[in-house]
Length: 297
Ligand SMILES: [Zn+2]
Image 1 (cartoon, helix red, strand yellow):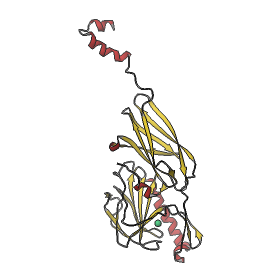
Image 2: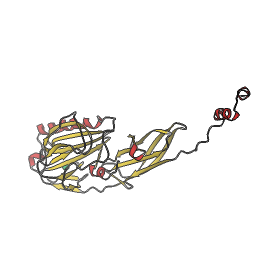
Image 3: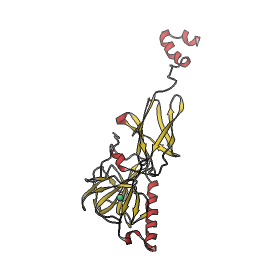
Image 4: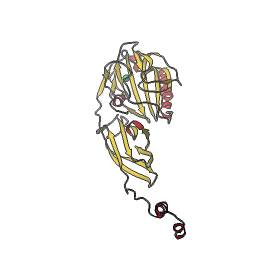
């Protein structure tokens, strides 16, 4: 070092060059990380928005809840990382641990745990009367229904790892939302599975819009859900549109938010024309209406 200094014409410049090697700039021991959750009270069937504001040293964030990976994406509008987590309608109401892992360029991996209280949504019971042949299925129809269920269940895992949606989600049809998400159904006096979407009342033929940008990953005509389609918005988020009278897109097609993708109908097991709108988020069955309340911009 003495040699280096002796050869320097300007001591100050030399010190500036040498000092950082021995006196690193002091860094805060705990980098400032702000984590916020929306909504504040989290219920069964909700979409939970996690926003992480962190300094420029953080270059990657991952997390886990219910033993499932939480996928974060960079949200330039908010200068933050954000992630959407689905709280399945059958999640037992209790406290859960949400773990975050932040990769800091200077300090390595920083781990943070949060307690998340899932409250009961107190889903009501809905009693419906439907034609007997639509409920008490013969063996052949039951076989068809099971095969169709298998076919659609495969879709929930194929979501692209790209983030395709842009900004807020929109209501896919003009009409009154029948907030019957999660209702325990009793059909013709018999308890049946829960209602995993919401119904929007609209006349036959009314246009159905894509709730956000994405890619059509399924179109079909099933016994229960009738003519329907599914859009993949990326990162495990998919929206579904059922009981349509007409499908105007094909599987593999990219769609824009607000694009007319179908027309309202009453195909499949439906009591009248309406849109059944559903949302899956990393396999969780969540209320699509809770997506409309989230500001993602
Ligand atoms: Zn429905």
